[in-house]
Length: 391
Image (tube, rainbow, N blue to C red):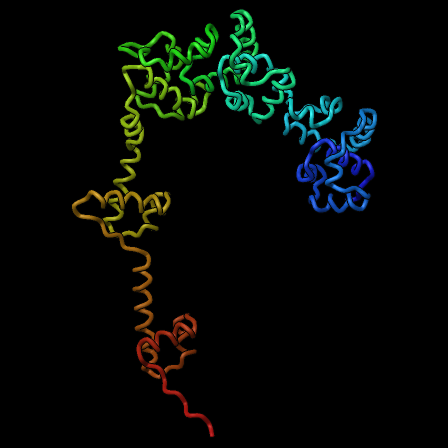
């Protein structure tokens, strides 16, 4: 690839704004060492570039404008920004080291972040809710003049403002599911969180007297969660329930665990798993066919070919049967067949050799290699005597 001046300019711009050489290299489909040697050939030193301040805004605009004329490279560059949660318009307005600390998703939901931290949720948990680094949350708070410890000691927001912020965030179903999943780790219901601060709910959850012969009203399950728990109790698998409600299997498992924590009528998960793993009528019928063919003297491979299944499945079925059976089945292996063939062939070779035939003649007659004939003769002890050396 031929390097153009505008490529070098954008590389220098990114290095001065805190982007590493390893992150820049994929944009140009080049190795980092190649970029390093290129910069050195233009008179730039990597360590010096990292310590230099960002370019002036006018110069930045010109470098970005010239680079974006190349559509292929510009598309890769936009993908790089998207992977860091940075919009291209934000990058054009401010240096990368500034906008990367405040991804667009955090700026958009800054009110919810302040609300969650003020009510006692850890910043690392808040960061996992938005799939960003915890340092980004800290940078966001710092830019607004707050610290995590100070926010935690501040009183909760008024109820009207809380309701508005949570309602805006939960407009998207995916956001609502993420928030619900995060609160479930603390055994807190989303419906209760909308009406009361998190700190109050969490204290009541951890109160030893909260579960005294009845389920506390603050921990009541939604109708959907109750339906999921009953379906699981009836023996439905996690995959089937998840498909019916449009959620993941892990989410179903979390709901069932939470149901067991706060309900007196708990679900015996081991019994349910045993129920779901019980064989179906089709599986029992196939098992009987495998055992019947095995008793008739077929090998693993022949049984698998006859039923159209894998050889490993046949082996596991017979192995499970032999573990509990009084009279285990002995399956004729393919190696036994081969050994019988080898034995018969060896007897033929010895018989022909005793008649005085040569090795080549025996090999051509039986359709085997000369090495196989020599091996059989040697094993039978019919090796010919060595010729005396010629004088």
